Length: 243
Image 1 (cartoon, rainbow, N blue to C red):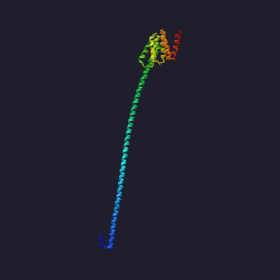
Image 2: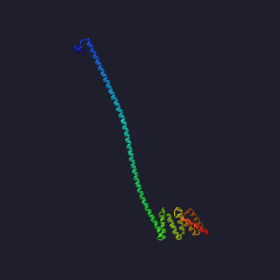
Image 3: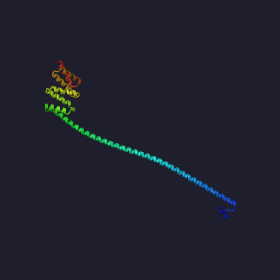
């Protein structure tokens, strides 16, 4: 370049050459400075990009954690839904069982009602043989069949009392006492118990077992003090005392 400048007459002396060298050197320095600045700028850009990449990686990591958390929540929700479905199935099955049980209960109730109706009819038949048809022997047999066929019936004390009264009317005082005693022994809370005990006392009195009859009358007054039978027993005691 210097040769070119000399040959072309641009630089005419040594001073001018020195100046030119200085200028060229300055330009070279400037060029180097500019290059260093560009390198520094590029490094800043690279650093910025690196920082941005780090932030993106951190964000991706956080997003992945959020995704994992969301996935876990979804799984928990699905499990809850399945549990609810299972619970609903259990409830439905339970309701079906209850419905079947209610249906069976209805059948049993209807059957029991049917049996109760038959029981009522048989008892009323036996009573009608006494009160309406006056067929006492047949009534005795009917009451005996009733006692045998319906051992748990609420009519048991009444049936025994009827038998006691029928046997008493036939002057069969042994069988009469037997059935009256069953009422007192097995059904002491029955409305027939006071009258049955009174009947036993009367039979004892009629068979000249006076001491036993007095004991029974006194027992009747203690066990059933507010009953009409107790009042009648007290009258019998007074009669026997004054006799």
